[in-house]
Length: 320
DNA sequence: GCTGTATGATCAA
DNA sequence: TGATCCTACAGCG
Image (cartoon, rainbow, N blue to C red):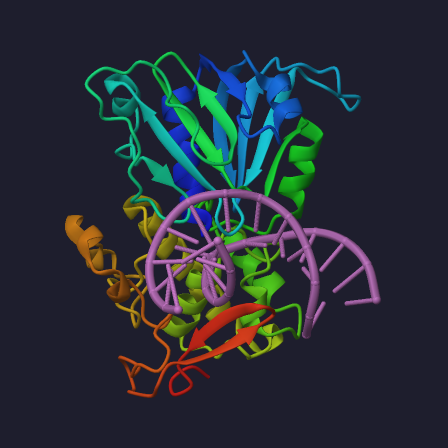
């Protein structure tokens, strides 16, 4: 799935290729027909990520449905869930507009191949599969499949959503506030810290992979209660999340093995190589989906268990 | 063709 | 805690 880094990339991609343009919005599948009608023909101003939520703003979209301090804007809220994904395609100017290399598909994995490199672009292809939303500009298109949420909301809804969200490592402004707030929320409850890291009210954007890898790198047992995490451990976790997730945005994949886990915070010199993207998948993480393999630190077999309905991976030998 | 799986989240009980 | 929703694809017979 798309953890927070994927959503931030998507937001950037959508803003790059559609920002400021009038777009046709449709729902080939039909399940978003009413919402699409509200947005169709309006200018897409920008897209933004708040944790795993993708917010796409439209200027002057139809306000008939709104009774709540309508300000002339409508926002398309998308949550990809486990397997939602976008595909993109278009002419050279559309692809060239992307600052992240215009991956054809973004979401669960970013290596899908779609049409789009045709010499001449003659419009979007006939929709394949269950396309919930299709965005089309003069130069390209984007298809959304399989989102868990896809709805038109108001500015007031957006404010409420921001209010409910825990701090987002990908929106950290470098100040102390977010780290301290994260530490406070994490240390407030007796629930297993492995569960709290997945709680979007505690921290936004972390998913199952980052959860496992962050705790491994920090040497923290996922079953340790949040209350028993030291303040310093919490702020170090935050700092590591900021680094790893920014790496994720840059690379378009989660790679946690290229930074020294013992010096995750200060070692800016251990940044990823340009070709880190070539690392084989299984070498990109320490414990996630490495059940039974020896821990690279202590040799203990990596364990797995189900925690709150999600697969958990950790090293019982060096996480305490 | 069928089954299982997935980087998510919500709801009922 | 379990059921449920969303979709594509790998693996299997």
